[in-house]
Length: 241
Image: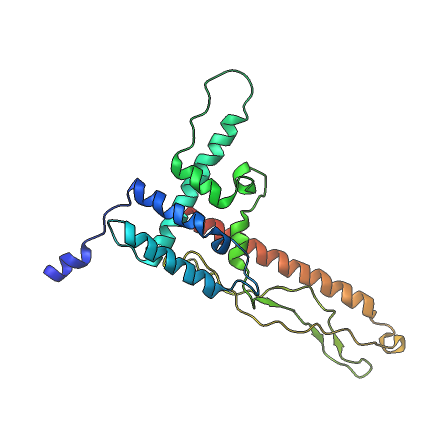
């Protein structure tokens, strides 16, 4: 019975001071957490930064929190603060008389420092996407090329598809609450394959090589569009949690 009661016991709610401490630590490390991954910034470096923030936070906070709890709380704070910042900016741009808008809370002001004052998703730009969401999609080895091959016939030479622009390899989107700061998409970079020359005589009465390339290009663009739409929807749902 005692074991059940211990398991059911939950940690105290976050205080305003703890929230402000967390956002302040994130602001000090935003050059790592908010930057795009690449040769000089790996996903492991970001994970190490979250671990460092967790240790710094627990050294000052009354209630110890795990790294996963800290990341989840940051995403919750980010979501609520964006709504407050958006409302403040809309009220500030209204013309005519009336009382001045309610100033931002210290927490929202610090969040604004983290995400930047020109964040398009806060400014209300139609179709705007928070740049931080895009950063979560990019990993150092997440790019690949799609190759489409046409089956050879008696008169045709094997035609390799035109080199397509790199896109993210479609993979299941993990929106688990236990890890809300990274969504790795793992793939390998493959070298583009140039289309081989096909004699005109071999395609007589069939689609030309140029027509095949154009069709493949259209298919590739559709795949890219559908994939990024899926990613954006998943990330928006993640922010709403």
